Image 1: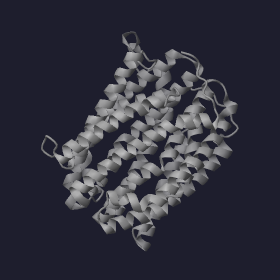
Image 2: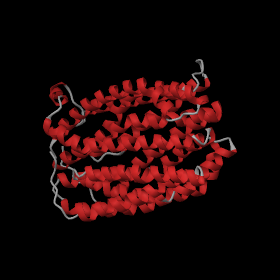
Image 3: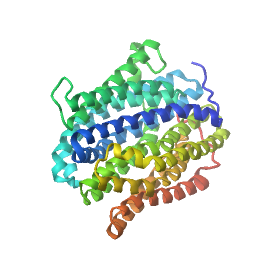
Image 4: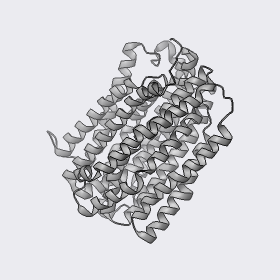
Length: 450
């Protein structure tokens, strides 16, 4: 394996970023198609059931995103050094941890979904459908976790195109299986459970495809019989992986819990508000794509620079990330504002729900650019192993700003007050992350973690 040498130009980052954006767009299209199919086949109540269980579903995934971020940073640093054994050691430890985590989350989700949906105040007439959909969907988590891990590891090596290729397999499986099960094409219709069946089929196909591809190519991430020792977690790998991954995982979990709290507030305003919130999830997937993708891209470029000993180039990574946030991110926010009246009616057929969703987008859209700046700063700090305080700031802002603002304003001005909570959290979050970056992180010297 040749030593990695990713260029740190804005153009190089854009080329790395584009397949990730396409991946997120493809995921968004898949989610949107599911919502459209459910909305058209099962109506507002079906869409409300989908919106009710999705935050819980993402809650179960939240730990995965933390551990894969840790694996991605470590494999990028090892690749920056050109050390194949360390790349394989990170891969083996990551696979073992994620495999066990996937089954643990699936079992936990199946057991707790009815209770959690009730606690969230799910409207009674959609409660049973939401439970059925959630309990079917959770069993896709083990194959999805492994597919997502290998995708993250490939990006850590600087390859963002291959994960996109296999994501197409994932989306085709999810969309096709959902349509077959929902509309009863050759089989009895499965109703709202069709969404869970779609996830299960698509995620399994994607994992098997990427697994066999790595084997066929003899890829550096492929572990054969002589590499079985790498599946036993090593202390020198596991500890830094936990150092990066655990705070991120806890952050993601608490963020997901905050979405449940927000959904609980929304549910008080009825099924139309819940359905509008579900539609917003579809739209926000697109608006926040640059921010989420740039966090990963900046983290990978920064980690490879750290591994190669090019600490002085971290500032270049930050500048490139900020430029792309305002160009690519700004374009998507503008499109969201311009096209919302056109695409929202695709899956919202009720006028009240449509009006609520339109106001939600207008209130929150601009603030995703602030979220993107925070993502760039968080990504570069994560590349050097600095994770705890950026994660803590994100969590504190959500629970001490977003939730109180949303709750207080919703009592004063109605459902629109909930949406202002998002904008307030993104604004305060950027201020605090920026202060930490400038006065605690910037200017220090960092070394590879493994």
